[in-house]
Length: 447
Ligand code: GDP
Image 1 (cartoon, helix red, strand yellow):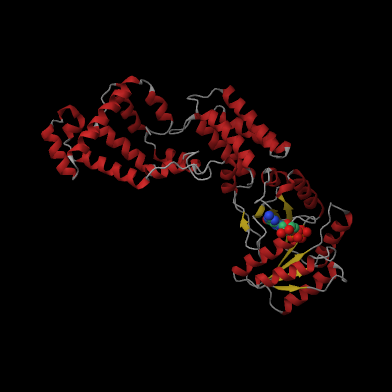
Image 2: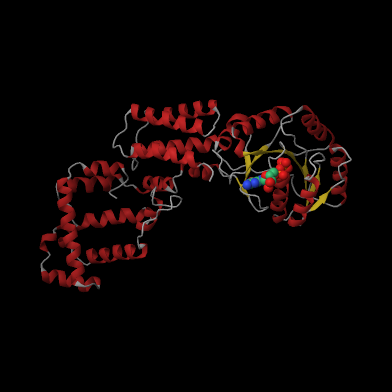
């Protein structure tokens, strides 16, 4: 799968960071050196990597650690945000002309990049949105391109305009425009001829089409598997003919990720879509934020970080911490910390978001989530059935009180006994671990 190797390396860097209670400037620098290596190995443009690392470092060093985040999480958050920025932050769309006015889209790119396939994929997307789309077979050099477009157009239920391979692309484009105007098409997608490498004839031909036909959007199709080459192609096409955006194909393959991460930064042009397979439905809108979390391989750990920040209540945490230090932890506090945890989405959702446990890693442990949630709410019911005095002073809990509590909570007395025992053990454990809470606080509450 795409980005696997980069993801793995970045996750290792973050794992080391997370295991530290405090980060020194040197820790951040070492981690960023590893991030830099990982990005370079993933074939990300050198200048892009340099700037990226500089930006992250500036933000990571000297920034106060936010409430609810430990320093490692802070660095992950910054790396994620900068990665999203690198890919353009906003999701970019191909701009259509207003109302029913026709929009002409010219597909460009090297041979084999996936231009013809993508033209048909795109046609299907617009058709789904209720547009009347015309595909134009302008690749007169690649022997099978016209037939391929016709077959794919038919599959998509989209008309294909073709004049065979004896006419020049510019004449085909002009004739197609007339046909489109007469038949009320909203969108015209012109497939053009690619070459194996960038060459003058190809550029001249594309420029000529643009001079003779009003092209509203020039879209460049590049193969993500070619890494830095794709970025260079994008840069050259933009300089020579001007492009509005890029479609990155073959992201379903074993690409290292360099193209996805560099194109926007090098050319300033957005990635509109990502090709995710050979089927005509395999075209996805490109979301920089989703792509970044996929590259970071973090599952939804970033969501967890956000949640921790949102839900963290500094005052409450301080109070719990003080009580614990004085070994005054009682059932009130126990309830409090349970509600903190619930605010973060409950046990099952937190487990699901943990790196290594969540999606992607495929290692979800065998935990019966429903049972875990249920047992938590029974615990809550038991504590609610205690009087305030009992919650603050659990040593009051003699057998007759326990019996009353069990009836109140609708549980067996054995369950009340178990909870009290667990609570005593927890208290004992905390006494043996002074300072534990301090670390815990930085980690976003006591769980
Ligand atoms: P063109 O020369 O640029 O018109 O390229 P084609 O559209 O003929 O595509 C070249 C090859 O790449 C074909 O075998 C396509 O099926 C394949 N292809 C195109 N897009 C994708 C994609 O997103 N994923 C994968 N796996 N293959 C693709």
